[in-house]
Amino acid sequence: MAKIKGITVTLITKEVVGADPFGGNITESKEVKVNNVLIAPTSSDDIVNHQTVTGKTAVYTLAIPKDDTHDWINAEVIFFGQRWRTIGIPVQGIEELIPLGWNKKVEVERYE
Image 1 (cartoon, rainbow, N blue to C red):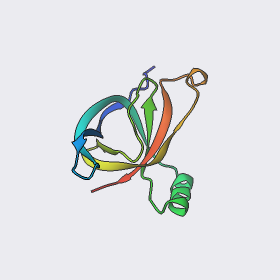
Image 2: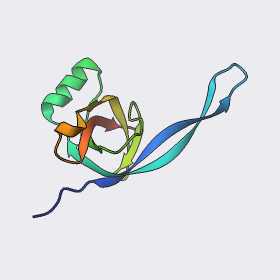
Image 3: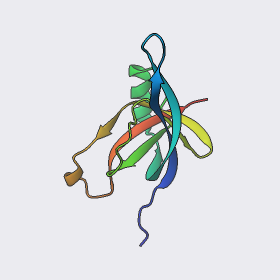
């Protein structure tokens, strides 16, 4: 019996590196590798719900590992050789009540 194993995706994070003369933050993009992320096509019901609420088309759903602490809200992600953007806030379950290694999920849309 094979174990469930995710792939490594690249998460583009924004780090504050300074302030501009008007007091706004200056950010710099940084690529972070996140291991063991599951990727599945988004269900047709979820696609319709996202289009109705946000106007965005969810293509894939990512399952995020329990030990991950990165910010996935409206973040850019690279996998399958393409760039994607997460839609909204990740949905998170109670870690102790979920038997496998993932407790968050977030949908992504194609981003160029």
